[in-house]
Each structure stands twice: as C-alpha cells, then as structure tokens.
Image: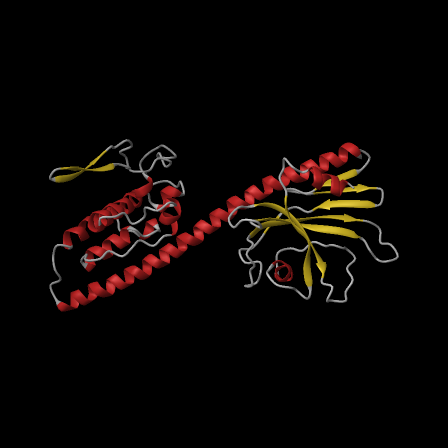
Length: 336
C-alpha cells in the first residue's frame, strides 16, 4: 500500500505497488506517508500520519461510494477539510447491509473501520439475504448504530483538526511576536544603550531607563472560548501586552498599556498580531491609573469589541495590524 484500482475487463485489479509491504513490517520511518491521491485519501493521510491497513480500507470505502452513487463522497474545493471533518452523503438505493459497511469504511477514526478480513467476509455476506425476520430487524438496528458511531467519529476528527490548527497558529504567533518584540527592543537599546534589559521566555522583556519601565509580556495561548459564551466575531489565538510604567504623579497616573492580540480582527480566518487598547466608558465614573489600558480576551473585553455601546469599557485604540517589516510607527511611538 498504497496502490491503484484499475478495471481490467471484466475484473477490478490492484496495481502500482510502489511500497508493497505492510506498514507494520517496513523499516522505513515514513512509509511514503506524504504520497497520496487527495480524492481518496484517509484523514490520517491528510495529517501526514503513518498509513496502516485502515488507510486502505477508507480508500476502498471512497471507491465503493463512487461506484454505487456515481459520485465521490468528497470532491469540493477544500478536500482536506472534507475528509477530516465532512459527513459523506447518504447512499440511496443501496441495500442496508452494504450501506452500513461502506459507512464504516469511511469512519474518520482508523481504529473504528473494519479490518480487511472483516471487510472481505462481510462483502461476501451482502449478496445473501437475511435468513429470518429477526436478522433483518437486527440489520436495521445495526444501520442506525453505524450512523451514530460515524457521527461520533466525525466530531472527534473535527476536534482533532481544530486542536492541530490552533497549535500551528499559536506557534506562528510566538514567531511573529518574537520578531516584533526583537525589533522594538533592539531599536531602544541602540538609542539608549545605558538602559537595562531583562528577558523573559519564550518571548518578552523589561527595559528600564531612569525611573521609567517598558515591558512586553510573553505571549499566552487563549482558550477556544475566552468570551464565556458571548463571543464577538474575533478569534483570538494568543495574546500579550505592552506597557510603559512611570512613577505616579499627584493625579495617580502611572502610564499606559496596550493589548497585543494574535487574531483575525479584520478578516475572518486571516490571522496576525494587532495592537489595541481600552478605556473606562464615559458613562461610568471611575478612574484608572493606566489610560488607556490592556485587557486579555474575556468577558470585559468582549463588551468593548462586540457591536453596540458598552457602559463599562470601550475600545480606545483601533485594532492596528503589526507587520514585522512595517514597525516604524510602532517603534517610534513606544520609544517616545
């Protein structure tokens, strides 16, 4: 495996045995896991995991679905997402026993699919009608259970896809913030070499010059629902903050801080670092020692960024993208 299915009249044949060994027996660490035919590839192939016999069983399910319905179960513009998360269309006019078997072959979880031996034995039984009314009813009950298992497998695959996607985005966030913070730190230290700097991990630092302190927080990974069920149309993957702290004057003012969010603030699904800040609503008589101030993603920030007027907190700094190659304004502002 993998191979190709070819029609050599009047028989279907397997061909193209480029690596014709069981994955469990091979000594190669990757087993050509990056080579697959997208229209027929199992979810684990799209995740670049090691193929097994279950990977071929999934492909058999795709081929069987295509032969019986005249169309592929997944053939849209985003094949990866469809194979990882999509629900195959129901086969119409197919005997329940065969339909259940094909549905099982298309389970997202490899371990839930039938083994090759089980698949062959059940295919041979599909041509034999049930020998009793009781067995016929049992087939119908099995079909219902197959549907439940398939949906549970699909939902688990969706959760796995979301987790992997957010982990990759969080890694990108750390790399992006490292470039932004490095550029700001280096610029400040170039023009104020007498300042002291302490570094945090994985990204972050504090720079002190005379009695002023500039601090950039290390990034934190956001939960999938930081808004407590009242999510605005912003998906925040990671967040940080930058602040300038000065000795408090007679009015109690101690400086300002801004939020840095790795999110899709301008276009859904397009992520990057954005700078923003918040302030106490004019409708609420309250004083803040920092003005404006940073907020982490949460209920309080949700009130400010969702549509409508908040009586508690409002956005004081519009969401401004931070690109590593275009940081002159950002650096100049915080250096000043």
